[in-house]
Image 1 (cartoon, rainbow, N blue to C red):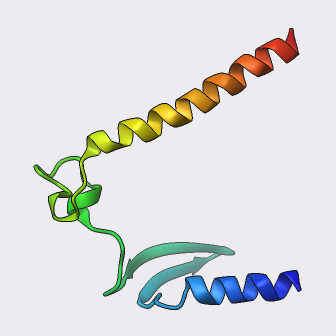
Image 2 (cartoon, rainbow, N blue to C red):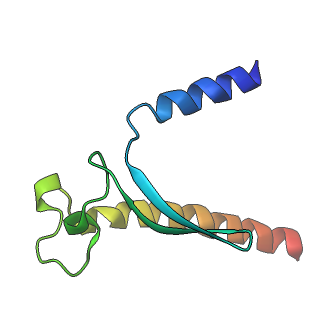
Length: 88
């Protein structure tokens, strides 16, 4: 039953995936040389730190990430303090 769950989960997650990938096979290695898709989630203006006002079309403010970083930092600091107690 677990394998059925995994197969169905993958099928569901990949239902709108389409596009092309260019690969190079060389001496047992697989090297990605390019990829493109009309339905890509990647947008240069959202991902780039160099584009002024990047992400405005997506209602994204880079300052929003500060809360996420603080939450994870708190978790990691708590873990480090616990490990320090256990190790001493």
